[in-house]
Length: 253
Image 1 (tube, helix red, strand yellow):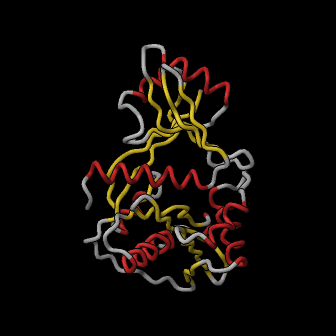
Image 2 (cartoon, one colour):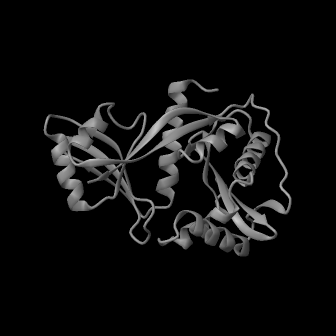
């Protein structure tokens, strides 16, 4: 396991790089009272995060709330290194509300978990446009059923060596997705999900475990991280991940 302070920093940096990849604008706002970065996508509903918030002064929370309401960013992501420790209470006091808490997790390389087999299930790397189309459609159904996806951004992943995409097939039907993203000296796992009707079969375990095994075969020195919702965290613990930090998600009330 890495030094705790270093791994929490790398976990947040990798997440920010991943979000930035899919966005059209990475804008920064600065004034005497505070600074923040805003990653957004104009032609897609996801993602749209403010991060690296640095408030300065007694009235900065109120000014921050006022200006972000005008510019209409949807979410604030409070990570372990990007913002002051007291920012959460300050924003909640100024009309922001808690939406979710993600667990930043690191894979324990001393963990010796066995890759299980599931009848009628197979996992494959996405290596051509036809497979990518199935991956995008499955990912949309899992994560963004009512939203738009910038398919052009995802199509570029086939030629980007930082990304490896995986699709899970049950009776040859695409039912699950995951990907690994190598950046900032760390491997991050993202878009791990299974269609609702195929959950609780162990598919999520395989979609997480196989990318980990392939990363370890390529590079055993760099950390492997992910961010987990409360639903996904028990699965990732079974794979061998341990919690190292929290990411708090806020929206304007």
